[in-house]
Image (cartoon, rainbow, N blue to C red):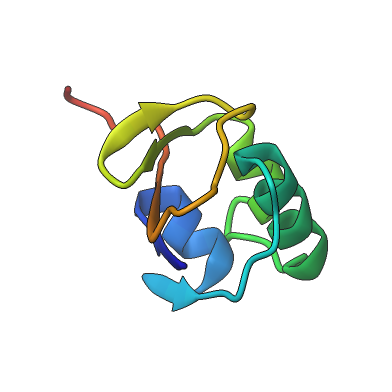
Length: 85
């Protein structure tokens, strides 16, 4: 599954995208695993897990909450709040 990071999520992760072999059942499970694995911080001192708390997510282009299933999914977009609208 491809994970695409934008803005603050990209800064916290240090890459724009990565591919993960995921057996996670829900988006929540995936985010928990990624947050525990990547503990670096942004220039503002935020970890990836802290950035996730402020994000919205798309699974294969559709808005999703943390309970969404990842079964059959190929892409997750991590979208922090954007200024200016």
